[in-house]
Length: 273
Length: 299
Image (cartoon, helix red, strand yellow):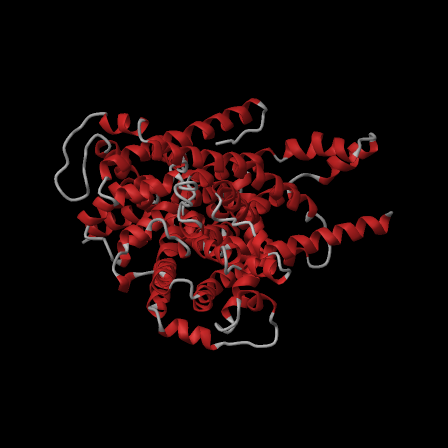
């Protein structure tokens, strides 16, 4: 009976792993298969590999440029998101006055607004600000979108950290502002990990917003580039998969690097809130 | 000189009072202003370039006679009605199954999460490759057994295409739902289980009387974020079916996107506001229900 139980448990685990790994498996198989293979062979053939797909995909599209744009936009947005929302979270958690409370409630409320709803008016605003096809505007826009979630996570996480850690620093001559950056911020690693994994990946993969505001091909990010790749070359699946795989690797690296803190961040940040 | 130094010093010691300002500025420019603007725009016939004319509530009246728009709303609601329970059932089962120590548990959790870091756009293309008619991977398997004629054209059938999107979406984002449940499970004190076991509670009773109520905050967060995410689904539909066949899988986001590109900006803004109400109602209702059953979000 006990054996049966643990066998069925491990069977369940194997099935879960297989189901979750299938998309990535298909993508990898496609990316390293020769285009001359039939679809069935692409999946079943384990003897020949063709790494030239990556080179071909790189050469036949603006993938390099798109990778560069994605890196700039994601790093910029994450930097703005983390600094701005950590400070706002700190203000909300430590100084309870009416405007902090009001702002927090307004933020929580806008969490319910799907981003596409603002697409048209935002286009007009971006146009007025001369922000279409620029890094700074898309960075500010994308980080503004992350605010509700990030501020929420940071403020509830900071509430769980005793005030005494800052007070000690203030006695030593720091201002409250300095105390936050020098002391409190270092305790926020799990919250930052949760924010970076969820929002960083979301920004890297963002398509629904950037498609409106980055229309020039030199400003395309990876999702835009891959989408236009698909429309240009149709079902050239192997090159497409190679291009997609290049765009996925950084997100997997981010996830693996921050995974250690991730659950802790969600636990303290989102659930205790 | 002394006065300037004093002012600088004063700014330095009071700098913390301004810590919320950058967030407020971003919020006003990129969230609040567009919402207000959106309401104004929805009352016009603006086409994206020429000057807009005020048309009152005409756009909203138009919506109710616009079959394609109503169909898009229906599709989004149908998607959410199936997606939210599916995501939560799979997510909770995964979390319960993985809430024990065994070799490689973190690896399994990472594998389950990894689809969520893949762009939904790419995810859509992957499954399009697998499922497409005549030259897809599954079709090839059917052919291998000589059953090519019996192949179900998954993405060509209106009903089937919708179910496919629901399933692909569920398995892509179940990692996040699972992680939130897993975090919730870790927060339940073990002695609750021990003392209830002493009192003779069965495993099933422990689940309904301890685990489930203690997961309250996780359930609230998951259900609400899943409702919002499901009603706003966009990227996956764009790449997997493009709203097709016909308009069978066109969701409200995709419809708004197409209208705003098709020179119907004013109308798109009004449909956006209708969509907002569509999201708001289920979120407020589920918050209310959960508050009543004493599972609540503190603020």
